[in-house]
Image 1 (cartoon, rainbow, N blue to C red):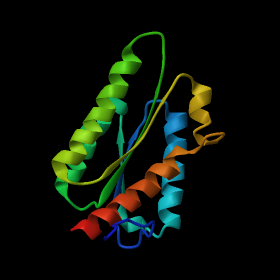
Image 2 (cartoon, helix red, strand yellow; image 1 turned 90 degrees about the horizontal axis):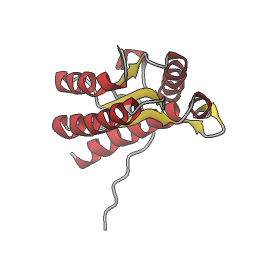
Image 3 (cartoon, rainbow, N blue to C red; image 1 turned 30 degrees about the vertical axis):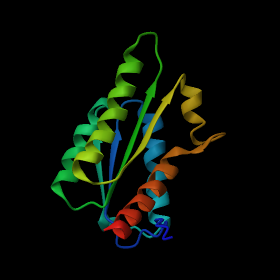
Length: 154
């Protein structure tokens, strides 16, 4: 039996990050954590591209376009959708999740889901270095692992 598993060595990988500006205090924290993890894993600055979009709804389109343009081995998708008083939360969360999956499948480029979907602001803070770890770092490490796995499969 042969088992394929990607590692967390980022040297030579080209990584894209799509980051939403909505809930910017949270998304800036996600971005900082992702960049830290990527650099610590050996991804060079010149192999990183960060694309800023207005909100989580726009992440999939930008991710698809970046992947289709070539030049990246994986994409980290970062955003924060915090529940409010209306159903808007449900629609945006679902559109972001389904759109990212579809973009990855359509392009063959692995994309990770670092889009927080929380009930309140404090839960989001807990996920950028608080009680629940750092989801930006996790999404970045997952992107490296998946890029390496895809290379092994190819």
